[in-house]
Image 1: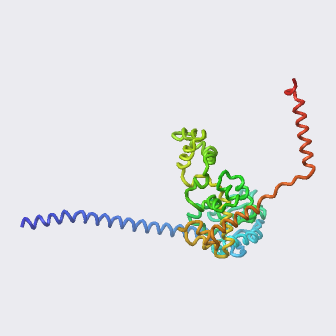
Image 2: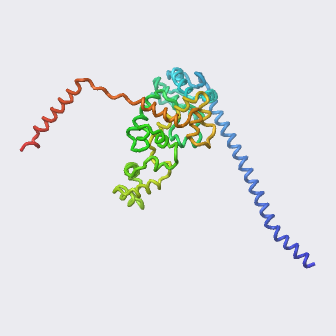
Length: 361
C-alpha cells in the first residue's frame, strides 16, 4: 500500500511541471493567435484607408495614358502629357517588359497654383507640384518617381543609389570618366588603364576584402583616413592612432579603417558608376533583363548582372568601361586670340606688382 502511494506521489510530482508547461504553451499560443488577428485587422484597415485615399485622389481628375504609364492628374497648365511622351521611351528602355506593370501603378499628381495661399484638402497619396514647372522639370519628375517595384535589399545595398532612367546617358558616362581620372584609388586607376579585374574590384563586384582591393598602398589608406575620417577618429581612444597614421604609420591607418563597418568605407567609384553599369546590363539583356536581374536575390551581384545582360561579367564591365572612355568630356577650345589676351593681362598685373611700394628699395 505504501509502495503504491509512493509511486502515485512520484508520478504526480513528475506530471505537475508537464501540466504547467502545457498550460504556458497554450496561453502563449492563444496570445499569438490574438496578435495575429489584430495584425490582420490592422492590415485590412490600412488597405481600406489606402484604397479610399486613392479613390478620393481620383475624384475630378483625368487619366493620361502614354505607353504603360498612367497619370491621374487635375486640369492645369502642367505639361504632363508631353512629359510622359518624353519619359516613356526611357522608362521602357530601362525596365523592359517589367514596365508593363506600371499600368497598374499610376502616378497621382496634383498640380497647384504656386502663388495661391488658399488652403487645400490634404492628400496622402501621390505628388503635389506647382503647375508652372517647365517640360524638362516635369519629365525629370516622372523619371525620378517611377512607381516600379523596387530592387531587393541586396541589390539596393550594392547600388547605394537609385536605379532610374536617364535622359542623358552619355553625360552620365562622362561623369564616370572623370571618376576614373580623379578617384584616389589604385583600383580606379587600374580600371582606367584597361585592367578589367581592377574595374570589377572598384565596382565592388569581386573579393569582399574591399580595403586591400580598393586601397592597397599605404599612401592611399593614409589619404582615406586623413581626408574622410579625421574628425571621426580625432577623439577618445582612436586619437592617438590617428596621429600615428597621419605621421606615416600604416599599421595604425589599416587598424582604423578595419574598425569601420564594411559599408562605410569610401567606394572608389560612386553610386552613379554602379547605376550606369546596371543600365548597360539591362540595355544588353533586352526586354526581360530587369525581371532576370531581380529573379534570384540570393545570388552574387556579379552573377545577377551577367544573367540580366546575357554576357559574362567581364564582357559587361569591359563594354561599360569603353563606353565611359568614349564619353570623355570634350576639352574646352580657346580661340587663337585668347592666348594674347591672357599674356596681356599677365603683363598688366606684373607691371602693377612691380610698381608697388612693396618692391621699392
